[in-house]
Structures are given as structure tokens and as C-alpha cells.
Amino acid sequence: MKMHKIAVIGGDGIGPEVIEESIRIVDAAGKKHGAQFDWQRLPWSSENYKKTGHMVPPGGWELLQQHDAIFFGAVGSPDVPETVTVHGLLLPMRRKFDQYVNLRPAYLYEGVPSPLKDKAPGSIDFLVFRENTEGEYAPIGGRIYEGMDADTAVQVSLFTRRGCDRILRAAFEAARKRKKILTSITKSNALTYGLGLWDDVANAVAKDYPDVKLRHLLVDAAAMDFVRKPETFDVVVASNLFGDILTDLSAMVTGSVGLASSANINPEKKFPSMFEPVHGSAPDIAGKGIANPLAAVLSSALMLDHLREESCAAAIRQAVAQVLKEGKTMPPDLGGKSKTREVADAVLAAL
Ligand code: NAD
Ligand code: IPM
Ligand code: MN
Image 1 (cartoon, rainbow, N blue to C red):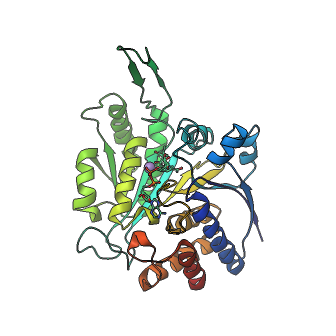
Image 2: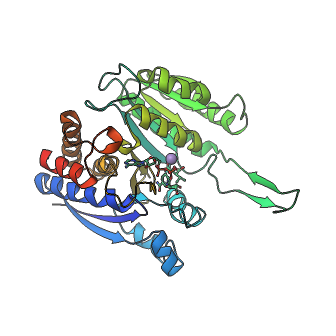
Image 3: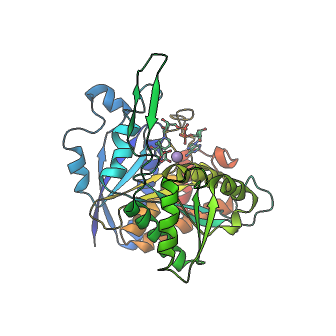
């Protein structure tokens, strides 16, 4: 039986709450399907930063590198700057470990109310491929003449042919295995340099995938269509910022951000991939025991797919689907009254 070494960073707010529930579920699925997990919990968080002065301790990145995967909650605290938390841990991890594919599925489960009326279960079912290492998130720029009348800021977007090519290929590959429709979402009518390059690369890569239909859609129209006709999307590919915004939107049209999972993948497996819910640390509900753990649980299923423990992953997805369908143990974000622990217990029972 393979033992998978997983680094666990619960992080801040509801991060540790949803991650610990997910670990119980993964261990139970592993017991049934012949997989074992060695969880190494790392206390990296805002609280730990306040005590030690480090978001990532010396040697921390090398430590992560020794693991088969990273299971991540969220970081971000009202009393610690995002330049420390998000820019000290989450964003450098995606870049250092070249996790250039950010896969974020959108699926409307049976039993989950969509805010859109008359949407049948499964009618919304698409994958978002978000570029995760460059684009609008390139850490390039600065503030000059700070605090003076001439106070000026520069924030550079970085688009490379290599960066566009590899995320587009990943999306084309996925589209090829599904309905063979890929929607590339940009704003290249206004941002003609970076996203103009993106379009050029998309059209070039499309030649290698003649079986896949490539559609170009501008992000403002895409936001409209995510609401107006989400069932027309199959695989979506977008740059870093647009992928971020659109996946909170796709999370909501499929019920709640409390169900939205994500994988930050280094396809070459040169570096560990990282799995985390789409949502953040949710300071407004942290410590109350009411966070929906299912986004983290479904992210653990993406991690199990990556580790080639597909039967464990399938069992977890099936158990989550059953709990949602029965509708007896729903957390507040899905209109119920159940606590984080109760929702996880229901998934364990369904397993
Ligand atoms: P958020 O996702 O934390 O919260 C947005 C809203 O969704 C809140 O009302 C929250 O209560 C609700 N929500 C989120 N997850 C939920 C869950 N599992 N169950 C029920 N409700 C849930 O976004 P935000 O408020 O913009 O950000 C809070 C902090 O988290 C910020 O510091 C931000 O930078 C950080 N953040 C971190 C990550 C990450 O580490 N991956 C992701 C997003 C935001
Ligand atoms: C996400 C988050 C992050 C992002 C923030 C915390 C920087 O919103 O993972 O979706 O924008 O990538
Ligand atoms: Mn986001």
C-alpha cells in the first residue's frame, strides 16, 4: 500500500476547521480503498507569524518540496497585512512550485439550490483552467513618490508565450476528453498587448487540436453568460485575475463558494501540487463551527486524483453528492443549520 506524504497548512480563519474535517474523511476513504496518508501539519499562519516573524520559516520551502502534495486551507487575517500572508505564502507557493494550472470545477449538485431559477442538477458542469503563475498577478511594479501629490503606482501584467502556451494546452487536453468545446476568456479588445499575445497563442495551439472547437469570449460578456447560460460552458481557460473572479461567480451559480474546490497543479510533477478550496479564511464566520467543509473535502478529492488514488477520490465525491441529495445535513451557506462537524460526519457515514 502506498503511503502518501502530505504537507498540511490549515492557515487562518476557517482554513484549519475545514481542513481537519477533510483529513478525517480522506483517512476513512483510504482505509476502505487501500491508501495511506502521512499528514505533516505545519502551523504556518498569521498567528504563527505574530509569534515568530515568519510566514514560512527558514527551510520551509525545501520542507514542502519533500512532500507528495500540499493540502491548504486559506490565509488572510484582518490584523496582518496581505503583503505578509497572501504574498508571503500563497502566491509565492504557486510560483515557486510552478503550479501553473489552477483547475476549478463548477458543478451543480442535486439537492443544491442555485440562485439561478430552473437549473437542473448537472446542467451546470464545466472546468475552469486559470493561469496561475503570471498575468495580472506578476509581482512587478511599485509605488513611487509615496504619500506625495505625485503618488504613482505601477502594476505590470506579464504574459509570456511559454506561459500562455502551457495553460492553453492543458485546457485543450481537458476539452478533448469532454465535449470538445474550449472557451478562452480575455479582454483583448482593451488589453491588446498581453491578452493579444494570449489570443495569438490560443489560435496557434488550436491548430494542434482540430477536434476541439475554440471560442473566444470577452470577460465582461463571459460574466453575463456565466449567469445567463452557464450550461453552454464545458472547459474555460482564462488568465490569472479573470480566472480568479470568474470562479467566485461559477461557485455562486452552482450554489455556494462553500462547495468550490481547486487544484494548483505542476503537471510535470517536478514540484508538489497544492490543493485548496476556492474560498478564503472567512474571518466573518471563523471560530463559529459553521463553515461548509465540502469545498475542502472536494479539493481533497482533486488531490487524490493527482496521487492516482482515483477510487478514494470517487468514493468521496459520491459521498458528498449523497449528503447533498438527501439534504438533511446542510450547512448555513446552503440554507441549512448543520455545523461543520455534522456535515463532515454525514459524509463519513455516507462513505
Ligand atoms: P472569503 O472567501 O474568505 O469569504 C467570502 C464570503 O464567503 C464570506 O461571507 C464568508 O463567510 C463566505 N464563505 C467563504 N467560505 C465559506 C465556507 N466554507 N462556508 C460558508 N461560507 C463561506 O473571501 P474574503 O472575505 O474576500 O477574504 C477573507 C480573507 O481570505 C482575505 O484575507 C483574503 O485575502 C483571504 N483569501 C485567501 C484565500 C486563500 O488562501 N486561498 C482565498 C481567498 C481569500
Ligand atoms: C484565490 C484567492 C487568491 C487569488 C488571493 C487570496 C490572492 O482569491 O485563491 O482565489 O486571488 O488567487
Ligand atoms: Mn479568489
